[in-house]
Image 1 (cartoon, rainbow, N blue to C red):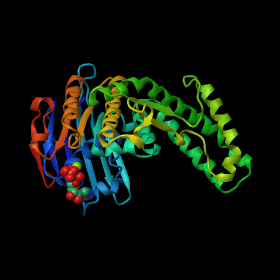
Image 2: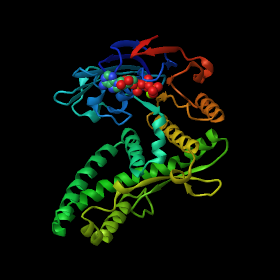
Image 3: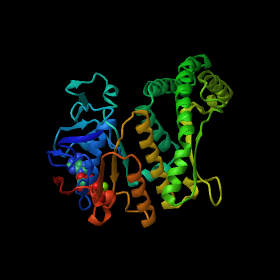
Length: 374
Ligand code: ATP
Ligand code: MG
């Protein structure tokens, strides 16, 4: 899949413009604060309908305006030749988000997901490794929501049950009024844990492999760390049972603390080094470069998941990612991207010299004060 046309209206500092993107991609060069990350943010919005930087929708409306609008036209490839037109708009006044696919407005936002595939690599990805477990849960949730049927629904059911159960616990209500939420919590929670566990188990080898290839032979490990002891994650009934038992066992502590203590909302995705000091958490012991490498490996595994689950090559968006890596690692990443079945690439960099991907074959665009010249 690739993006052939992009139309921007009042998105951050970007000039209103219509752009035709080359099939192989483009390198966007510009000084700091000219709009490079904003450009990638606009493109990525078409995938998740939110900011990759965690910004609120209202923040992305250009100063002094009320509505932003991003329209992307995609073209498919051999086995999926049909493309789509995805249009997303947000209005500040009234906080309204509207999405349409091929001109038909989606009733629910989730219906509009999945027509566009992209993976974004950004310097902030290091938070995936350095940050707390919630960062990694968010990574898993976004990835699985887009790639596993049923995951979004389980996630929203789980959140509903959790919020109500926590409210009952906090208010000190009798156990019968707390445990009415257990059935819903356990059912949705088991689906979430099974999906997370299956994904991690299936992709742990690829994570290690990417890490080794970028780091020049070093090894790293990714493991799923649920709160609930899981024997066999492929058996959803067994997971439900284990979750139910763990809740039962936590009952006294939950009453004391007034909050639900076990469940996928407490999961972690553990990332560890395997060489010197085997088993050291990257979060606590990794160097800056090691953490960045691990974050990159996670994104590469994300791209691989999309390729396999959706049978299409996602767009690869690289936001100035080589700035902080040593030459060897940068070179190996570039080699890796050329070797993998990489689709369209949009990369940003402040200097021409940073752009070496595809042996310099990417067309170069410039950006200044939000205006892109092709
Ligand atoms: P760097 O190389 O430093 O990462 P960049 O080119 O990626 O820079 P962006 O993050 O895209 O820069 O931001 C460019 C500018 O957009 C900033 O100066 C910021 O003030 C401006 N900006 C952010 N939000 C809005 C908005 N809603 N309306 C107008 N301008 C905005
Ligand atoms: Mg930037």
